[in-house]
Length: 117
Image (cartoon, rainbow, N blue to C red; front, side, top):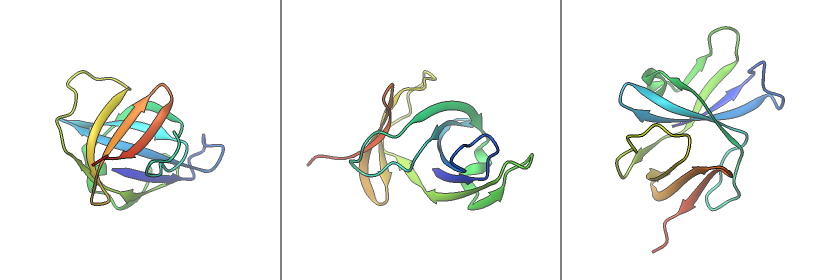
């Protein structure tokens, strides 16, 4: 799930993106500086506190504590199992916009690659 978060008081640009990946009882979450584009460059990413599962069902919501508005802009599903070890670095296959893609988050940031056939 990808949320566009507008109006967060600690956000210099006024907008960032939250990438949420379901992991049992919570969502592992990364704050992305920009919207990752298919086969585009890395975007900045920071591993942040886990989010509650209910965010996976939210389309748009005012964030508590006067921290802006979050709106879902993309949703996907895993093709493979999620790594059991909690880590800020991942490499997963996803169905994203009806395409199978690889999601990579590493020391360079976050990037989405189309599957090579």
